[in-house]
Amino acid sequence: MENTTNITQIIIDTINTIFENLFSSIDNNLYGVLDDITFISSDILNDKNFENIFGTSTSNGILLISNSLLLAFILYYSFKYLMAHFTYYKTETPFSFLIKLIISGICMNFSFYLIGLILDINSNISLAIRNLGENLFRKKYLFF
Image (cartoon, rainbow, N blue to C red; front, top):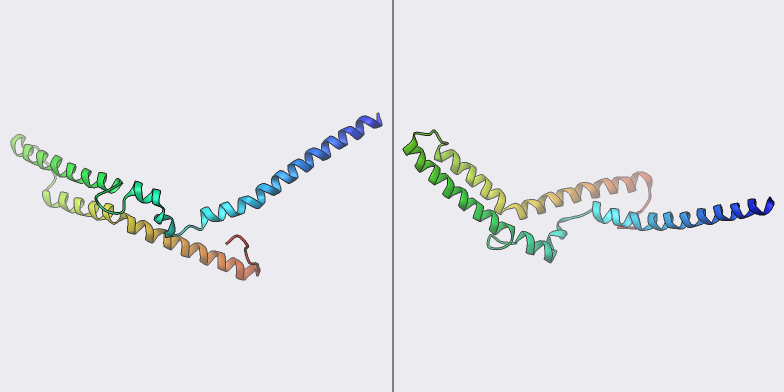
């Protein structure tokens, strides 16, 4: 009877040791990964894959597709406006359409710059929070 209790205790201690090593390994690696995800800046925009997909000018990447869609909207609206004169169908005024088109075109073509600004603002806020935590708790983080 004492032998089975001893074997059971050995198994429980072994499982506890395995889980302790596993969770301490995850714990040590997890903070660095979470810090890399949380504290990003506009440097991430300089990644070659991101530049290829998003596009750095209006002639490549998703920006080329968005500018093509703007041209398609212009053609659609002009055809719709032309047909409205024949069918007496009420359509939006050209002035309001052009204002919407210009605003959306500016937002799309300057989105790379706007994303960089948003990421920098996020980085500055998170660094301020981190510095506040360092000053309050007088502890330096080793992962930065």
